Image 1 (cartoon, protein in one colour):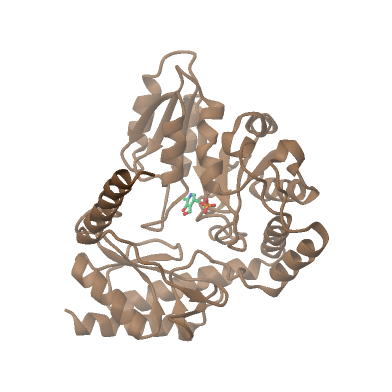
Image 2 (tube, rainbow, N blue to C red; image 1 turned 90 degrees about the horizontal axis):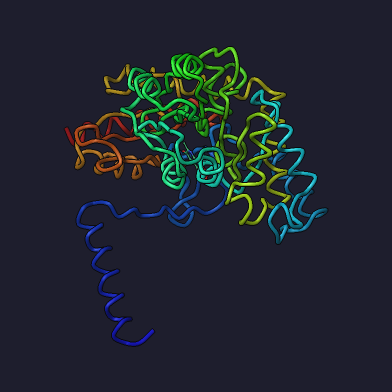
Amino acid sequence: MCAGREVAMQRRVLGEIAGLRQAGRLKPEVPLGGAQGPRVRIDGAREVVNLCSNDYLSLANDPVVVDAAIEALRHHGFGMASVRFISGTHELHRQLEQAIAEFVGTEAAIVLSSCFDANSGLFDALLGPGDLVLSDELNHASIIEGVRLCRAERVRYPHADVDAVEKALQQRPKGSLAAVVTDGVFSMDGSVAPLRELAKVTEAYDAILVVDDSHGIGVLGATGRGSAEHLDLATPPDVTTGTFGKALGGASGGFVAASEAVVELLRQRSRPYLFSNAVPPHVAAGSLAALDLLRRNARLVKRLQGNAAYLRARLVERGFEILPGRHPIVPVMTRDVGRTQAWAETLRAHGVLATGIWYPVVPEGTERIRLQAAAGHSTVDLGLAVDALTSAREARR
Ligand SMILES: Cc1ncc(COP(=O)(O)O)c(C=O)c1O
């Protein structure tokens, strides 16, 4: 790059970073040493209680999962060095697809490198000009990306507003296809989408229901089958997307579970599937082992749900305002940016890692500390967090 352009670029980039810093939107990263889990090592070696991980079932460092990955690494090497349709489909990919389809309750599933990829390649593959996609305004960025990339008419509906969905479906042109897409669990609030109502409306208007259950699978429902099980839906949504990067071992990989026809079309048309390397076999093996542990051990989900209930009850006892629900995402409302930052710092000083969240991630006035319980937390860990929050509140009323 010539010197003048390099200087101009540098100035622009530094200006943008300064702008982010000034607006309080610069995201620092926490350097972890050792494995992900209910307790982690930060700042070199200090052990803290980790209440900001998506490792809901505490399987990221489970010996069974780790051993399965090591074994696969020994037998199948480090990577596929290819996309799936060239020389990248492994027996372990097929096994993982079959296992996740069976778990979700659909005919088939396709595994991609991430749920971000699953969502971003989904809508353009299924819908075209003249079709309609309705997306909840609070949906995850990967859904927004996928919807943006598709050529159908796109409508953002007000959060969880089933009436707005129904009106839009009523007005759609005859002969068009329509999809309604929602997160199963909204990760800032830990709230569950109105899936029963959405299922009813999509069925009545012949639309398909797409649910991203990244925070539901392995977390909600008596057997961890997610939001649909939690809400007692008779059948799974038409399309479920999800991640292996949270409850199911926390490595990486995502999936779309749907009918055989939809899955086959995605194999032909999903651009992230067609043009990005396959998940490494050892990651698929670890995810399979995690899924297997979940399937065979209902106590794992029970422990997670018990911990979520315990944490919520202790916080309410201490008079904290939390958003209602049963999910292990527990937003503790601070309703002030300064208070959020100060509480997060005090928590860390007391050996608890938690995320402070403020505008623009959530609306102004709804600032919060977001806690995430995991199956591997002890009541001592959770008690420590509640005590640390109480100290933070006392220090900065
Ligand atoms: C609702 C939702 N969808 C998709 C993703 C992306 O998942 P992955 O990390 O597998 O790309 C996330 C993760 O942040 C998420 O919360």
